[in-house]
Amino acid sequence: MKNDELMESAKSNLLFCFISAGLFKDAIDVMQEINTSRMSIRQKQIFYDQMSRLYSELARENMKEPYHRKYVNLCQAYCDSALLILPEGSYEYNNVLALKTYTNPDIPSEKKIAFYERITDPKDRNLHQLAINSSILGALYMGDRNSEPALYNLALSAISDIRLGITETASKTTLAIWCYELGNIEKASKYIHASLEDANFYNARHRKVDINAVLPIIDKENMEIVARQNNKLIILLVLVCIFATLLSVCLWFYYKINKKLGKKEKIIREQFNQLQTVSDLSLIHISEPTRQAEISYAVFCLKKKTLLLVRLPAWQWNIICS
Image 1 (cartoon, rainbow, N blue to C red):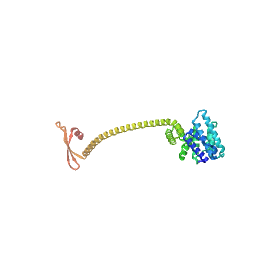
Image 2: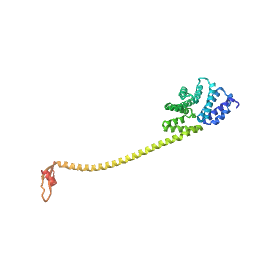
Image 3: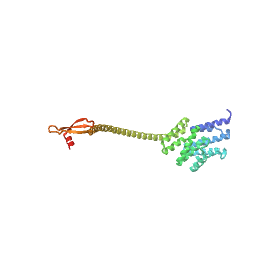
Image 4: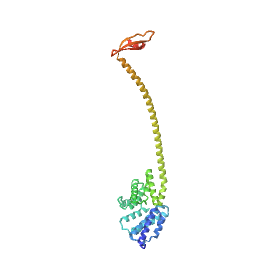
């Protein structure tokens, strides 16, 4: 191929892949091979934007001096180069200016948030840029301990990544960290594992480093929560077993008492029937007991004119005759 413009465009695309995968050394090697003099204006805009993002990532990964300041200055320089050839006030111009503002340590976070609020539109059709801007805005809100807009923008960034199919931003990881700090361990574990799956799929080394720094902490906390839930479940099962045992004992006692009551009820019913029969009799004659026999006899007549001879003990005879 002798088309210099296409050759440089291919190198620029390769640079983007290395930055997204976290292969920063390889990205710098590719950058050194690119000849910007053979690029079109549009390709230069893309190249400078990618280089500013590369050094922004390096500055974030290296917080020690003098490396951090060096990478910040390089990021600022590439942002200035992009701003020189971009139309002022254009969409691309504002996004590059936002990145320059974000990486400038001398600008307070309130101004950074205000700037990103102006350029971040949830209805933005450029999902890739929306994901980047909302992720940065969410991180800024996290720094100010403002939980509600932080969660909203981090979630918006993750949703934009999913819709676009690009998972290069750290929105899920940052969202997991913020959920962990807010005490929502279940969601934190869910998001950090989803972020790890994406990082493994795209082999993003720097993302793996970020994730593995917080994954054990979140998983440990999540396991402790699961263990506490299991202990509560075991206690609940023991209480249910005790309750079932007590209920069985109560039912057994109820059955025994009910059985005894049934027998007594039967006896009472029989005696009642006997008394009812006696109430239907007409007394005819009672023989007095003698000393030789303590038992006397009573002759009754039923309503149907039938005679009935009944043996009476002495005490019953005395009651009847009194």
